[in-house]
Image (cartoon, rainbow, N blue to C red; front, top):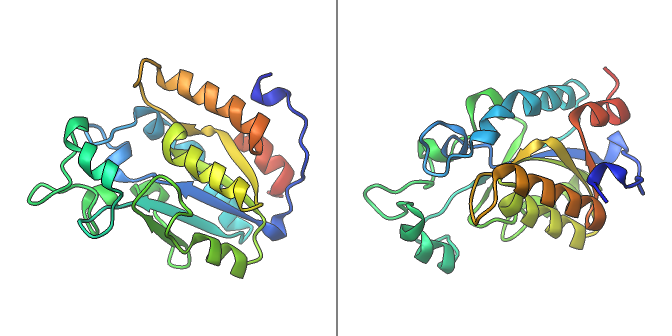
Length: 215
């Protein structure tokens, strides 16, 4: 079955729902950036619309940002970096704290009261304060958008599921890139179908706004 064919098994409750924007950083969305995902750049306006709606309704908004240092990284990722064309060590380090690549893209810039969760791996929950923040705010449902669909989005969705959160993946707000013999579109289609079957709801921005947000 395709992701849109599954009937929902939970409803969206605005009192217990937050938006999580995953890794929409300069290093992923800018042309020629180290881990460029062209599809992510094309989705900025879509994610921006959802972000604005959450803000108007005063619903919680959180971001994740991928960042590595010599003291904070996963060994396999660090060791594979050169083969993948990434420079993680000085002097040409990318995705280090305060570097241009690690900053959230300007059109989605977080406001002062919106937390940016710094992570050194794919999973937004792993070794971060994300779950503590959600528990403090009594959040039970996460609406997730961002990049990359089969890396950080996938890992965070799976982790949310195993922590008993309701997950909503934004169908037109997650992106992939061509690799491992599959196109960006292939990765998105496969992952969205999987998410809907195994981990949560998959909804378009329009569907989310209609169900959750009164404009």
